[in-house]
Image (cartoon, rainbow, N blue to C red; front, side, top):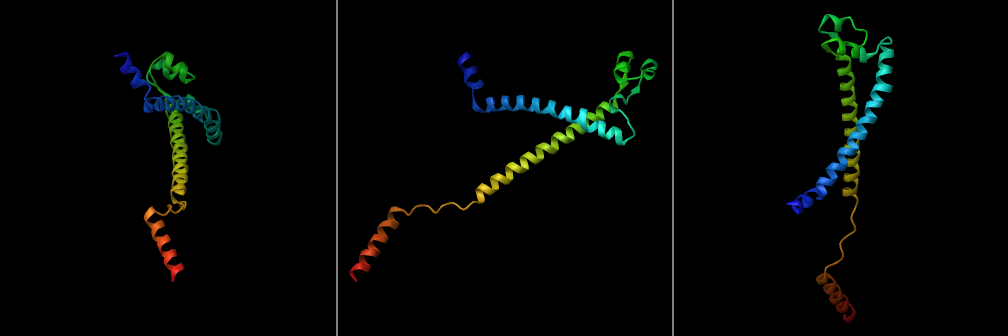
Length: 140
């Protein structure tokens, strides 16, 4: 059973998937930082200095009176629609970047496929026929 598991775990597809998940997690952190530290502050500034992370609706009296979303969560139930908005923008950016990457990969693949291939070498039969033709020309 251990050998079977080792064979399964070391298959190319499993290893490729593991590498993809690790790279995806690191890429997700980069996108989180891009959204939270660069894009959302710009959007907040354009919208009049608003901080989307603290947009929430308190579902209890204590949560409604809280100054920040974190304080509201500690005080009781709260809907954090600002955080949801940030995560939604994050998803859209990730989807857009992946779309661009796949589009570039497809373009390169098409260019490689469209590149003129060298003509295949003549078959043995064609070589023999060419030799026969040349010998007949020389005789004649």
